[in-house]
Length: 484
Ligand SMILES: *Cc1c(COP(=O)(O)O)cnc(C)c1O
Image (cartoon, rainbow, N blue to C red):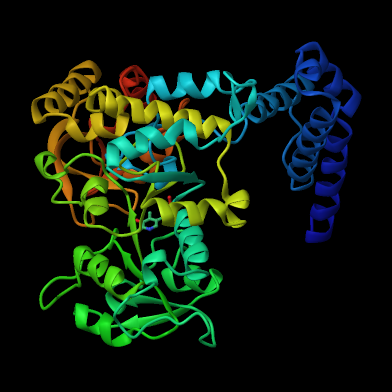
């Protein structure tokens, strides 16, 4: 047979196979019998039938034999089952990265989840039950925020980026009341040009996810004035840069990087003092916002929100879902005058949080107020595990698996989420047997629920620090399936 005849024969075979492809009606009926039409509706079923048939047709035209109709029906049902799970799925975080941005940052406490569920119906969000009149939605979290941080006032928005944008927008449009009588040669309401925000060159940072301080600043309608140098900025640099257009001294926490060596920063108390003397606002973008001292947990000295508030700026902005360990939101706390200006700004309406988030934040805060945060808030529970507990858990996995070559090793966990750069916590991880770590990690991710691990030194490591209580069995089942 020459090449031409071989091609003709192949085409005839493919055509014969193509005639065996089941009809759409048959597949629809199979989906119907399995209850999928009732569960998902007609349109998603049609889409899945079409996709299944198209895949099959391409395979057959490429020379594969057509499987029996029952097998094609099974493929369709498999596709429907996978689709019905949705794209957003719970995963087991065995990476040891506590605040893992790709895995949804802070896992929520049980109390927080319950509060969010209870808030999902009607509730007195903006309704005073005693008087029957309208009330303030932010009031549900502000009292606790003030008690926990020592601030006079607070407001909550969608994330810390929104809090910074709101603070810069609202405060660059006005002057603080103390401006009257300020002795330094500064802002004059009649001065031409856009308002100015002064920032140290060492703090013009990108936080991640496209949040760049200079860009946010521009969006707020203010001009950026860079002060000092990358490694050294003194209070005198700020003083010299003050002009009649100055409105805000901005301090940005270096959340995700460190500069070391020949460095100097103007401190927040210094800036707060200058802001008072010069009659300009002082805004602190703190980022992760811990309420606990981090030192005792081996995390270095991350400033607490309370310490930053006590340093005297007008506003401190921080995240709800980093070290606070609550739902995604951004908190703005500080002096009443400044917070009030933010609350009255029209941008607040576009950045405001919903009832479910507010309820979750209030519940997370109440863990701190009741003194049970270390036990109840998953982020802090993960940070506070003792070495003995981690060793015992990793060892129990090893023993339950009985997998030759798997061993407990010393490793390091990270806090993550753009917080505490370079800080790691000692941990004990289960190292799976070497050999094809990428394949093993992929099979772990393909299990149900998916288990996300990390690869180090050519081995898959499972870090118990971030595996939530009750997820041990899921880890073991996934490892068994992935290493069979
Ligand atoms: C993380 C971070 C932000 C952004 O916080 P989101 O809550 O993610 O918007 C802003 N500033 C600093 C200093 C940060 O660390």
